[in-house]
Image (cartoon, rainbow, N blue to C red; front, side, top):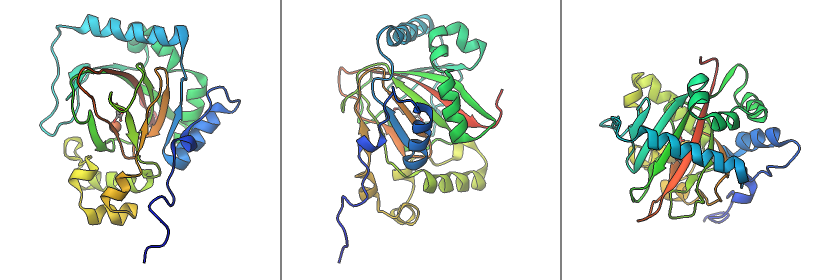
Length: 271
Ligand SMILES: O=C(O)CCC(=O)C(=O)O
Ligand SMILES: [Fe+2]
C-alpha cells in the first residue's frame, strides 16, 4: 500500500520565487536557497541595465571570434580558462577584479552589488569569495539538452542571469529542489576516492545506480526526476542556486538561442 500520492511533498515554482523589490531581498534569497537549494527572481534586470549586459555580452564574443577555442575534456568536462567550446555553443570566462571590470564594466557592477555580497555571506559564511569568476555562455547548436543533470565538482553558490527570454525549448535551467544535502555527500565521497577533478562522476542519473540514488535521495530516479522544476522566465531573470542541487540546462530546439551570464561564489578566501 502506498501512503500519499506522487504529488506529496512536491515543491512548485511559486515557493522558489522571490520578489526583487522586497525590503529584505538578500535575506529572502539566502533563506530560499537554504531551504530548497534554488531561488528565482523573475525580471530582476530590465531596461538599460539589461540592455547593457546584452551589449557587453555581444561585444566580448565578437572580439573573441577567430581566436583559438579550448575544447572539452574526454569526460565532457569544460575546463576552459577563457574562450571555450561547449557541447552546444561557446563560452567565455573572466576572473573577478580588474580582468572582469576592464572587459565588462557594467556586468562587473551588477555582479558585485552589496545585496549579493550579503546573500553570499549569509549562505556561505565569511570569509567567502563573491563571484570569483563569471562565465558567459552562448548556446545555439540544437540538442536534447545543453548539459545533463549534474552537480558541480567544486561546491558553489551561483548567480545566473538569463539574457534571453527562456522557455521550454531554449535551454531552460532545471533543478530538483531539496537535493543539495544528499548530493554533497556524493561529491565529498567522489573527492575522497580520487582527489582528481577530471575523475569526479557528476552525471547523477547516468553514472549512479537506482539503489544509490534511492539510498541518498529517498526516491528512485524517475520519481526524483519528476520533481524537477523548469525555470521559464523573461530575459533579466536571476537564478540563485547551490550547485549541489541537482541541475541541468535543458533542451535547445532548432533555430533557438540562449545567452546566460553566471557567477560562481565560494566558501573561503580565493584571490
Ligand atoms: O547554464 C545553465 O543553465 C546551467 C549551468 C550550470 O550547470 C552551472 O552554472 O553550474
Ligand atoms: Fe552546474
